[in-house]
Image (cartoon, rainbow, N blue to C red; front, side, top):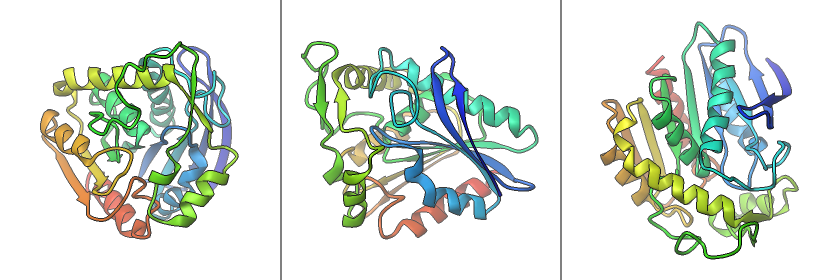
Length: 269
């Protein structure tokens, strides 16, 4: 196994921290897209499981997050997050010309991944979503657009809702790479992106496995139920996990959850 870290110039030149975990004779490549305020390293365990099954794994920090460039936790247009995902997918496609490429997206990264599939249909072999923000059923940030001056920051209060495992919640709170504030601009653009997703749902045609925790305290599982019904994919699966909270890949049942995601990918190689 080889690991490499690099700074990737995205579509507009913003440099994104990119981490590659590469195996010999990979049977597929997987791009992992993290959620709001977090970073690529929070997917170490998922990555270990993917590597063990023969996948190359590409992880990056969103712009304005952790080790990537950009104004902190800020988007001026929801297309920025979509085109950043596309830039990383392009690297995975170029470096893995003979094997299929998949994308796994969690939470805001699930929005980014769904939006990527909507804007760039047919580019990857399949998509896995975890607790994805796709409909904003649970108005965790209140009504939008948030009527505060642009450039205003709000505290990151997501921590308590991330996971049912208290060790994960504590680690999240103490993680120096987890951002502690969120710009109003990011939130307003993100929800504008969700509205765009609704309007363009029929453009989403990729194979997809939509996964969500029934007890998700941050993003309602109704988002995933509605998305499943709205998209045009002919190969689509939905699983709502009873008792699990937001970070289904970090819950105590994570091995079972990750195994289902990997098995779904393996059937499509």
